[in-house]
Image 1 (cartoon, helix red, strand yellow):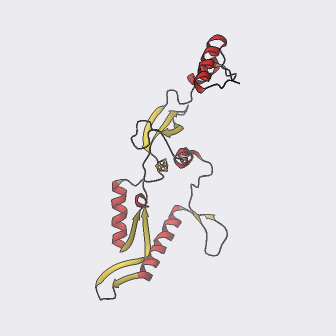
Image 2 (cartoon, protein in one colour):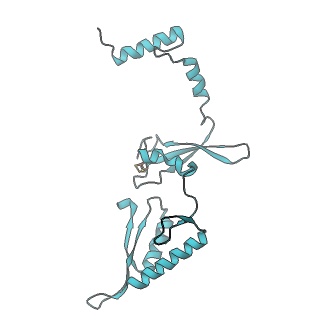
Image 3 (cartoon, helix red, strand yellow):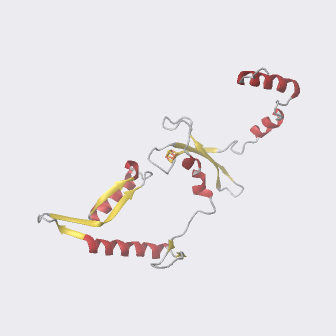
Length: 194
Ligand code: SF4
């Protein structure tokens, strides 16, 4: 039996579509054109941004449209084909970036699990920030080293480590590094180096 090449297959599809309006696989081309015309991103606003997940820094395009109430609705996020970094591609993680904004499973309130407990409980942002401040102070007080073994003044906090995120802006990175160094933290890392 003669083998059909990919080129033959495409030619056959074109001939059949011209004659019948359908492809050999039975797709209705008129319907396909209609679907293309009804793309949900048709007329949407394109906003260029970066994938927030890792230091590769792939460019993304977010498509938004205003709903009846005038609120911007996120329709789609995809790789930016004009980016020299990712040329339109996204890894599986980046391809799910839209879930960051719309997933119903996204945690949107602080959750706290007390020591020994097997349950998470919702607490307010104020409570969470107070707890964080309290823990940082306790750890710093417990692990602060004023002088090293040779008697050199070092004033460092060895019990806390900090990792910055790859999506920090320069200003956020500057602020975070300043705060950590003010606390005496020396174990400072950046996601971009991990
Ligand atoms: S798409 Fe993947 S590789 Fe690109 S920045 Fe996001 S997580 Fe990193």
